Length: 78
Image (tube, rainbow, N blue to C red):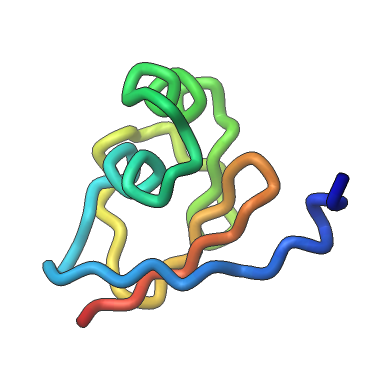
């Protein structure tokens, strides 16, 4: 089993200027359901740019870094 600290940051490319936090985590395949994502965000298990984020509809923009469940996602706008 791979240690979560060994996981490489992932680049997530989006075609719009932003994506909502709950949509991003589901889009990246880090959760099986939208409900699971929303609960994780509300419970303070997600960080955006190093700070805990509890707003599930927070807009995520180019260059933002989202951390969840040992994964790090960097957003890139196409």
